[in-house]
Amino acid sequence: MRRLTLFVPFWIIAVTAVAANLRYAMEISVDANGEVLGQAMVSGLAPGDWPEAVFRLYPAALGADRLHVTDAWVEGASVTWESVEPTTVTVALAATAGQAFSVTLAFRGEVPEFVRAGGYGSYARSAHTVVLSQAYPILAPWDGSWIAHPVLPWGDAIVAEVAEYEVDLTAPEGWAVVAGGTEVEVAPGQYRIVGENLRELAIVLLRGYEVQTTSVGGVEVRSFYRAEHERAGRAALDVTAKAIAVFVNHLGPHPFSGLDVVAVPLRGVAGIEYPGLILAGETYYDRYPLDSLFFPMIFAHEVAHQWWYAEVGNDQVAEPWVDEALATYTSGLYFESQGRFPEILYYWESGYAGGRLRNKTAGITSPLWAFPGGEGYGGIVYSGGALFFHSLRERMGDEAFFGALRLYRDEFQWRLATGADLLRILSEESPVPLDDLLEAWLRP
Image 1 (spheres, one colour):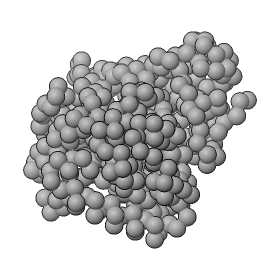
Image 2 (image 1 turned 180 degrees about the vertical axis):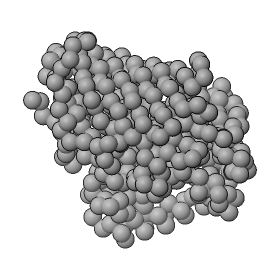
Image 3 (image 1 turned 45 degrees about the vertical axis):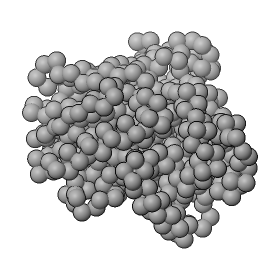
C-alpha cells in the first residue's frame, strides 16, 4: 500500500496537481430527521500510480455515524475498501499515472441536532436549518503521496482539489436549498446543483427564511436570514457587496458568478467560507448593530476567502497562514475603503500580542497542530499574519505588492499553492529586498 500521509513534516511540501478534470456526480437525499443517503461517482485522471484511492469523510471526526461509506465500485465492479479511521477510507483502484479512473461510493450518515452536534455546527440541523458541510466522500489531494491529515478540533481540516460538481438532491417538503454553485428546483423537493472549479460543495437547507439580493460587478450576492434579523441581513448584504467591489479593484475579478451569505446557528466561530457560499453565525445577527467592528469583519474576511482558499488553495492544516493570514489582510482593505483602517490595525496588533502570550512556541507559519486546543491560533496566524502582510505592503509599495498578489493568483488559480510559492513571488516582484522582514516575522 502506498504511504498514507497522516502527519507531515514541518518543512514546506511542494504540491502538484491531482486529477485533471476531477468530477463529482452525486445523488443525495436528506430527510426531516437529518438522515443522509447518497452515492458519489468521482472521476478524473490519476496523476500517479494509484493502487488505491483515498477519500475523506470529515463529519466522521465527531462520530462514525455522522458519515460513513457502505459500498464501493470501480468502473461498475464492486471493489474492496477499508476504513483506515473514521475520516479516511481507502478504495482498491489499481490506476496508473495518466489513466482515467472512476470510483463510486455509496454513503450514509446522520446530521445531528445543533445542540448535540459538537464542533462548529457546520454539520448540524435546527428547527430552521440543515447545514451540510463536506457531507460526502472527498478525494484527498495527491503530491506523490496522499495528503490526509488527522482532523483537529480547531481550524479548518479540509485540503482538496477543485472539481466539477453535478448533484441531484432530494430535500424534505417545505425546505429550500442554497448551495455553492447554482441550484435549481426541478420538482417539489428535487434540486439540481451544478458548479465548476469548486474546492468543495456546501449545501444548506432552510425553512422560513427571507432573502435580499444585489449585484456588484456582475456578481449576484444573496443574503439569507430569518425575519427577526432583517436589519442585520441587509447589513450583511451591504458589507459583502462592498467588500467584493474593493477586492476586485485590488485583486481582479471575483472567482464566481454568485456569492450567497446565510445566517445559521454556529458555535466557536463567527463565519465559515465555502466556494460561492458563506455561513455566518446567527448570534452576531442578534447583536447587530452593537458590534460595529466585528460584524463587518465576518463578511469581509469570508469574502476574501473566495480568492484565498476557494480559488487559490493550500494545505490548511500544514500551512494555515497561507490563506488565513492573506484573507485577514485582504479583509482590512474593506475597512481601509471605509476610512477605518486604524481600527482594524489596532485589532490585529492586540490580537497578535494576546496570541503570543497564550502560545509562546508557535509562529505565523506554524502548522495547525502547533496550537494545542487552538491556543493562540487566531491571534498569531490571522492577526500576526495580517501584520506581516502589512509590513510587506509598506516596504514594497502598493503597485508591487498588489501586482505580486495578482501574479500569485494567476499562477496558482484553481491549484494548491504553498507558502514557499507565495513568498517567492512576493520577493521576486519586490523592488527592494525583503529578507529582513521575512526573518523578523516568519522565523520559528
